[in-house]
Length: 456
Image (tube, rainbow, N blue to C red; front, side, top):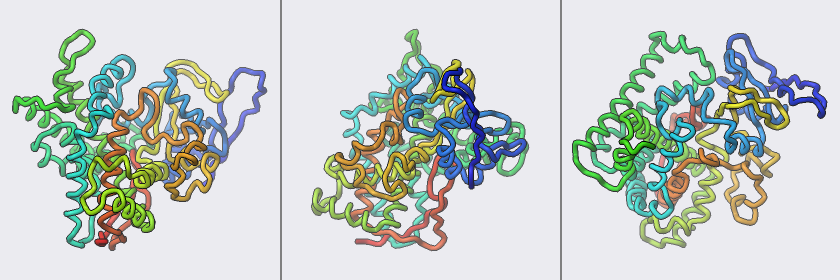
C-alpha cells in the first residue's frame, strides 16, 4: 500500500503553511479505510512524505506526526491535551474523570493520588504476588495441552493488577468476566476511532449489541468491586483504599463517578496493555527459540535451582532487554492522539486550535532512521553502549512527560518476572489454529496465539 502526498510550495520566509496531504482518501471514509485495512503500513509510510502529514478520518482532518523529536514535542507541550479520535472512542469505557482521560488540574491531582502505589520503593511489596501469578502459569501449563495464549495472558495481567492494586479475593470470580468484556470493547473501540460515524453504532446490529452488553457489564463489575470493599470495612494499604479516601481541591471526598472512572482507568488500560505484551513476548519465545535458551541460561546462572523471585529481577539484564525489544517491535499502545488547545506551530507547519493529531509508537520505534536493522529482533541493542545511540523519543512505550504511564516500573518488573519464569521452564511451539498475524485494535497483539509448552 502506498501513500501519495501533495506537498505545498511554501517559501521559508512565509508564514507556516499546511502540511502535505496524504493521497488515497475516499469519499465519506477519508483515510479511515487504510487505517482499517493496513494501519501499521499506512502509519509507517507517512514518514516518507513529511514530518507532519494531513490525513482525513471520515469528515475530520487529522495531523499525523511522524518523527521522534516532534512526537516528543507533542507529548510534552501544554499546547496539546489528551483528546482526539482515540480518546473519544474510549470515552464510553474510561469516562471523563479518570486519570487516563482527565486534563489540567484534575489530572495532576489524580496523579498525586495514585503515584504512591507505583513508587520504586513501593513495588517490592507487590513482588510476591507477581511471582505467585507467574509461577501459577508455569504450573498450569504442565499438562501439555494446546494453550489459548490470549486467555492465559489477559488472565495473568488482570489478576496481578487486581491482587496488587485492589487486594481482595472478591476479584477472583470476576477476572474472567473482565477479560471477556475487555476483548469485546477494545475491538469495537478501534472501529469507532478510525470510522467515526456515531449514528451507525447506535443501530441495533449484533456487533453493536455485543459491544453495549460488554460495556454495561464492565461498569456493573466496577460498581460491585467498590461496593464489596466498602461493605467489608477493610482498608488495606492499596490503590482502592487511596481512591476511597482521596479528597478534592476543597478537601471534600471525591465523587462516586470519579472513583468509578479511576477504578476503570486502573484495571482496563493496564491489564489490556500488559496482557497484549505478554502475548507478544510468548510469540517472540516461540519464533526465536535461541532467545528463550539465553533467558533460561541467565536465570539458571542468577537463581540456581530455586524458582525465580522478584528479588532476582534487577540481575536479569538480558531478560529485561528482551522485554524492552519486544516493547519496541510490538508496542501494545501503537497509536496515540492529542488535540491542540491553541493555534500553534509544529515542524514548521501551522496547527490550528482544535485540530487533532495522531502518531504511532509502532512506526516511530521501527523507523530505519533511528535503528540499524530496524525490523530485526535484537535484545542486545539495549546494552548501555548501544542504547545511547537511540535518538531521544525514538523509544517511548510508556509515553513521556506528565502523561507517562505511572506504572512503567511496575509493569517492567512484572513482565520481566513472567518472561523469566515461563522461558526458564518451557520452550514453545505453535499449536493447530494459531494465527500470529497482528490483531489491530486500540491495542496491538497477535490475532489468535495457540501454543504448546514443551518442558525444558
